[in-house]
Every structure is written in C-alpha cells, then in structure tokens.
Image (tube, rainbow, N blue to C red):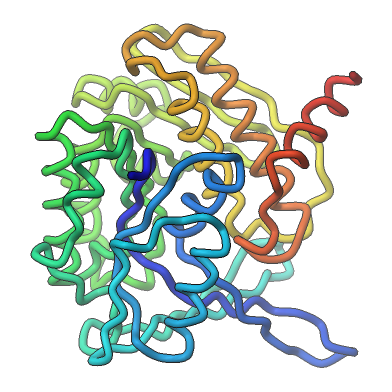
Length: 321
C-alpha cells in the first residue's frame, strides 16, 4: 500500500500556449493533491490518490495519467452523475497565474465525494496523508476531507496540509478562513506561502505566525518564498534554504512539486518526525527546492515534473560535481 496518500481534487488544467500567434489552451492533469503524489512517485515513492472525478472523457484521461505516473488509483472514484472539474490557467503580464474554474457543488465530481466513499484502508497503511483546501469549499467534500484528516490523526499517521488559497472558489473570506484554520488543526506538517501563513494565523509577523502554529501542535512548518527558496520551522528552530537557479517558464505546480519532494524525502529517511536532525530538514528542503525549480522551468504541472535522474543530475551540477 502507498506511503504517501493524497485526498482532494483531480482536475484538468488547460494551460495557455501561443499557437502561431493565436491563443490556445493545452489540457493536462492537475490539482494540488494529484500534482504532489505524481512528483513523489517520479522520485521513486509509493503513492496513492483518494478522490472523485467524472466518468467522462476527462475523467478517463486523468485516471490514465495518474496510473502512468505510478500512482495507486484504488481510492479514485469515477462517478457518472457528476462532471470532472476544469481549470483554465494563464500568466498575467506581471507574471502571476490567473485561474478560471469550471466547477460547482451541484455538478462537479471532486466536490461530491462523501466520507463513506473514502478508501480508509489506504489511510490505515500510509505514512503521510496530504490534503488541501479546494475540496473544503463546499459539502459533502468538506466533511469527507476533514474527517479523513481526523481519522489519519487518530490512526497515528502524519498529516500534511497546504491551504492553496484560491479566493474565487470560496463564498466569502470569513468562512474560508474559519474552514482553513479548522483544517490546519489536524496537520502535523503545513506548507504555506507568506500570505497564506498570515491568513491562517492573523499574526503580525512571520515569526509570530510560526510560533502560533507550533503552539497549536503543528510539528513542521514550511514557508515557500519562490525564487528566494523556503523557510522550515520546527520546535528545534527556524532555518532558511536557498532556491536553485532556474529559468522560470511556468510556475504551475511548482509548489506541489516542492512539497512532493519534501514529503518523499521525509518518508525515505524513515525517521519519526520528532527525531529529524538539521541535516535531515536540509535534505528535505533542498530536494523540494530542486523539484520546484525544475518544474517551473517547463510548461505544465505534471507534464513539467522531472524524473528522479533529472533531479539528481540537477543537484549534482548545481553543486559543481
């Protein structure tokens, strides 16, 4: 059974491309949970996915993509009563990503998974359960994801949470913050941007925000900073890890690749999270940084993810060896 299991959305990302001067969009598999397990799988990890997609042409293509990347899909449901979620993505002139989602609680499969449909045997045997916030925006998926995270905690499994803030998907900001903070209470590991960290804690400074989450029971906090690298905080201290240099082509999925590499290395170390030494944290962070850098140097999320050999070569060349 898989070591790293992700629960949440699996969708089609239509990424903007220039087709001889005309706008076009190329479909590819996406969704933060799916991106993460694909990256960990490419590194050699044992991974699985729990979620719901439509029993339609998009759903079949997504199922095939996960399997092609070595992800266990025994927790994936193809439901003929709902549609697969679609997202259109393009970069703004300022370099930010602009998303348009075709998704609703009434029609979208990912938002209609119920807790009774969750493959709990996968959680029973995993080392880490990852969850994000996009399936927390409405019921019944909200209860399914939160209950799965609580179940994992009760079973003694590590839990990893990424708020992945997408304000347009929520009805309003207050309810969004309430739900994301509820989700954070089940997490052993949290990956956030600086903005998401402030949203989760409502604290004035980064250090105060980190302290608040540590007091809450979070064991590892990862703050991603793009081209500056990342910060990792535990009860033993806070350290900054520099990013690798790479030509940025498309940042879609880069953060998920980072976290996939980070969690893969955690599992590969085979240590209890409380036993991690500074060298272990550095190895996790720098592998994540390498995965994120390589993914951002290519188009697409899962299509842009590097192989294990590419990551090893990249790290070796960066070290001048």
